[in-house]
Amino acid sequence: MSIDKTWMFIKDRRLPEWQNGMKAFLDMAFAKGAVANTIRCPCRKCVNVVPKTCDEVALDLCKFGMDQAYKRWIFHGEELYDEPFDDNNGDIDIRSD
Image (cartoon, rainbow, N blue to C red; front, side, top):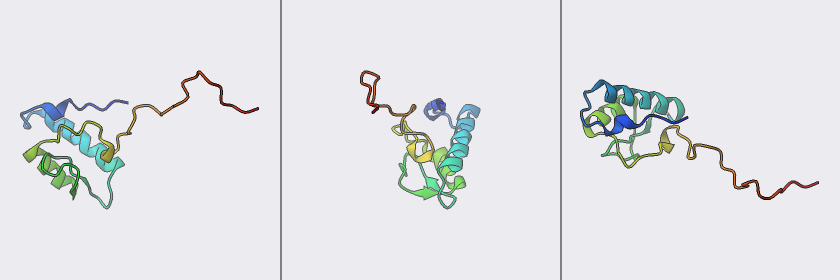
C-alpha cells in the first residue's frame, strides 16, 4: 500500500492538508517504528539522526519541515521495497525433485 506523501511538499504548514499528513505520518511512525517512545526525527534539521518524542517531532516538523530527500520512510515503518523481493523471474525452475 502506498503512503500519501504529498503533504511534505506543501509550503504552508498551517493548511489542514499538511497538518493531516503530518498527523498520519506520526501515527504510522510511532505505531511501527518507535523505540522507548521515540523515533528518529525526519525534519530538515535532524535528518533522521536525533531520536525524539512525538511532541518534539511534531514541533520540529512544523518549525523546520520534513526532509524532502527522505522519500522512503524506512526508519518509520515503511518497507524498503513495495513488494516482496523475488530474484527468480520465472525463467528457471530451481525446484529439486
